[in-house]
Length: 351
Ligand SMILES: NCCCCN(CCCN)CCCN
Image (tube, rainbow, N blue to C red):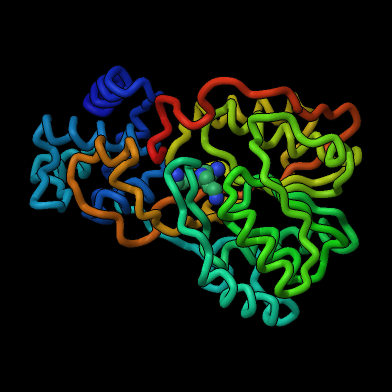
């Protein structure tokens, strides 16, 4: 145990990311499962900067070697794993729903097929706004989830930030009474407007920087919000807080993703305290519900400078947990201006 403690404390000192013996143990389990850096980050469920530093420390202790871009345990590393009883990861994920608990069934199939075609011409994700969209199937799984919880039919829905094109999927499903979207990126707003005009979707799409307070007419006017904020506590407070500010009253719902790729368990605790303090209850937390298509600006992101081997990401590695929250009596949204950097902290790495 002592070596894990030593590596964890050194890794925390170097990265300022909270690190524990369990963090090191999970990285070793991940190495026993895959030699690919991105898969090791994905399996370990620890922040990328911390995983990168732990790998460097394991190498310094001759417990790991880098053969080309492959990350392998040495004989000493395998011996340590045996001694501590560390084993490879084993998945028991449902092959049908992929662990989401919902599927895109026949009632949504036609709308989903249309969405698949429409999203082929979507604007690419850009670094400037920390964009990274989820797969089209994932976007529709969020529609299925919200309908399964009774949050869409006859409801007014608002989307805060929409590189995932949730607004188009929601409108195509025909379930909400109204869909509004606020998005900083004009390319996306124009794309959504064109699609809305072409398919008669009647989407209320507006360019808006979510660091600025919301327009008056959206405050207290919606039943359900969707957002997928950057991974700083400030950004989550701003995006989710504004989502709450759009809600009509108690017992309204909000959906958003929070990742482990850029947020430690300690940051999660701060995030969850912010949610509780807003007067929300967390009704659902679905691990790895969201899977993000690899963005082509990966060489510009901070995480790339930190990787111990320079292997371009191939398979999906960035995932997030889908949160569903509900307001109760006394809830309080947040609609103040945000100043300062909402994209970067010690744990973020894809900005
Ligand atoms: N920088 C690339 C990954 C960004 C993912 N973040 C924004 C997602 C927008 N669809 C945060 C994901 C979890 N909140």
